Image (cartoon, rainbow, N blue to C red; front, side):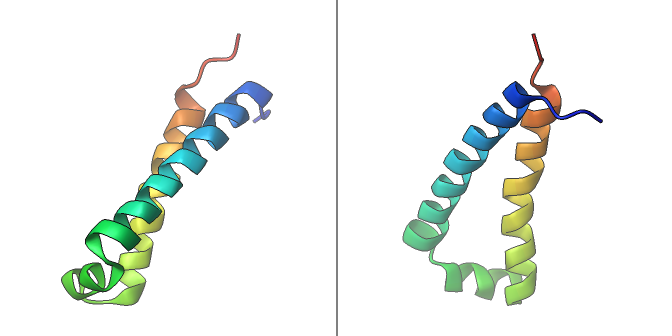
Length: 67
């Protein structure tokens, strides 16, 4: 699969914005320890948060059309 510059650019912009928003949300609003208590383990919480960043970024890359 050949990587396309435009697709990478849009996916990177989305990744940075989404990651910053989730960091603000998790560290500022929800408090990370509250999420750890809710999910029951640190590893599970990290996996969920990483998947919330990686999966949408991959979707933006896949669905961005190259001109």
